[in-house]
Length: 337
Image (tube, rainbow, N blue to C red; front, top):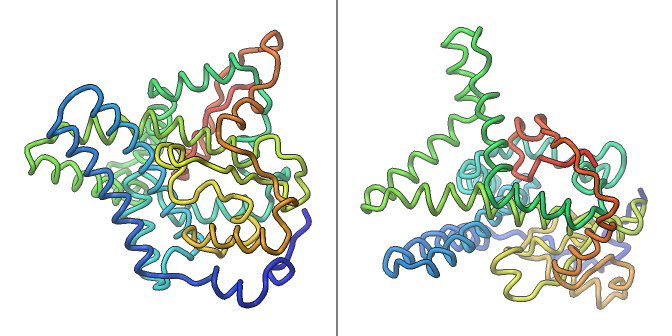
């Protein structure tokens, strides 16, 4: 794949602006994500009805993707100016609540950046099957929204962390702690905190449930939007996709600038909160027309499901254990065809 230098597409002054990292902004995004989750829970507690539950369910699932974005930016070392704060927010406020782990994700994710849309890209499995039929897409969405995808991911992850039954108990305990111990602590803190308010059930119905369902749906849609059916796998401007989102889409599907994906692949050292400014500079410098873009996730889905239904061939659901054991939060189930 062809690479471009930042100096070839931005001025030195522009580079200085977009690469600036801020501890305060990192703290604000983390506080916003968690604050929004707790506010959504409070909305349902004080006004309990199906509408407020659905609203809280959708909002929390989208903010859980926001936590994954914290982990993502921390894995690049760009979320905060302070390295210690970068790691703390990425791990304890981003990764562990999602049963993920920043260090493992970092190793995996940098392979994706170094080999985007190439045979060595570990994320190629997420984009290569497209286009698919509408029937296939509905099957995927059904597995996601009914919790099948999320359940199988977590089951495989937990079983891997526990280890085989022929291992000594002490070894299995050490293995579990090394893989999921800190994530378990974070979940216990969350459960205990909600129980202290008298609403322990919120952990199950408005944390685990969105995580296992709606979070899986929007993660899949985001994965499709970022790399499925890109026009040129060898052109850094066109091997990923920026999706222009409405305010509603940003609220429920694509929080914290996750849709600025071409900008991110061009310069992965830019913090997420500076990606809109990077796009502004790229437009001003005449590079917008070089970039692969689409208007909204619905247009992406229509393109990705353009294979005729009479060519639908349901296949065995493939369990990608390696991704799940590594703690990757993106969905890991793909139909064989």
